[in-house]
Length: 65
Image (cartoon, rainbow, N blue to C red; front, top):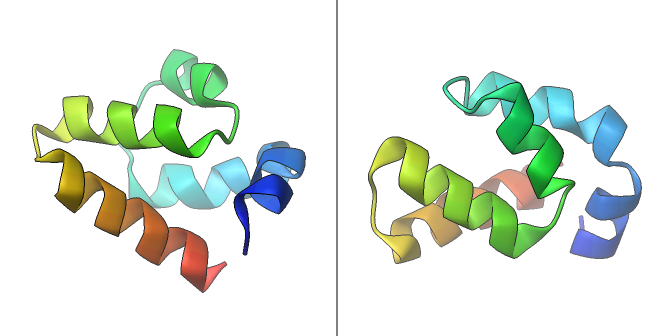
């Protein structure tokens, strides 16, 4: 799924993201609002992983939607 569709349907898709990354807070989900770069930064910070790994995880998740 492309990121325009993810952003547009964020309220419906957010639950799937929460299931994958359960440590992310509600405030962080709200701040991301489906934006790819925001989500990558949050995942990177919350899980203490490198940016390229966070990008790969987010892109893999989005590709499975």
